[in-house]
Image 1 (cartoon, helix red, strand yellow):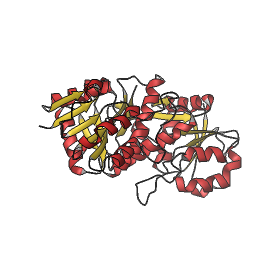
Image 2 (cartoon, rainbow over the protein chains, first blue to last red):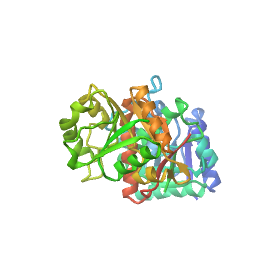
Image 3 (cartoon, each protein chain N blue to C red):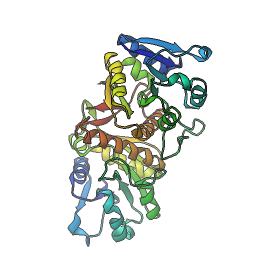
Image 4 (cartoon, rainbow over the protein chains, first blue to last red):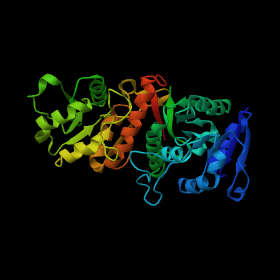
Length: 191
Length: 191
């Protein structure tokens, strides 16, 4: 059993909490009013919108030392829906990893809509969570949470691949915003 | 019926030619030894590896005026398989469009492996060709070729989205190279 702390009570935070609970893991879910409650999980999922990340890091960065930190963000420019706000040669995950040198940072869940995490399926496929990171043990720990919760997990490579995961997540969001795919559809992964 | 010229006789060129032929379109397929044969198609598919593109543009750029040019490349660093060789804030498609101001350039087919174009399916899904470009008529013309050949076509937005399509194509190639997905699998699109 793994102990998870999930920061954020929106639809992504709720869906990830449900996956973890289904797999028999313990979940501490913290919302905006819980800023004084320390995180207790070995895995901390940052299920907050990208604009809130810097505040979370400022307030809780010290608590994250030694933990696995999971960045799920898609750092879109939400005014234009036409670009990311991170530098083209970087990623939100790279920024977070740079701010948390004592943590093992993973990128995951940004290419799966909340609806496909909750359903466990995307169309006829089992939902696949792509996980990028530089620490194999951390990736395996998160993958176990994902698979025990009934989803597929796939190692997407080193943390530098977060750039491509964020591009894919952005692309998928633009397709949903343009009503080319539904919020229960999008990209599936066929092994 | 649309007339297509396909430059390149590799597995991608062959697969795209087969899709077009299945849809009842005429296909002129040209290989390396056909450099003196002018292209006759209204759609020209550049089914050559990215490193060969500059040579094609130098030799045939004048012939491409007024035509729909389809860039299918994934501009990987094939030595490292760890990055793209185009600038982070650009794309191969953007470079090609800049070189061909008299053409309507589309990005397409770079997120579908040859095997999924040939089979028409990726796992249980019909293969979907994502098409980005700035000219709606050009996108509709190519989409008609794709759908008449039995595949799905999806408008992925403006040509600037080629950056994300190339990132997604790169990601998919790294997953296949790492044997996480097969060359007949990869990303599927669920509407």
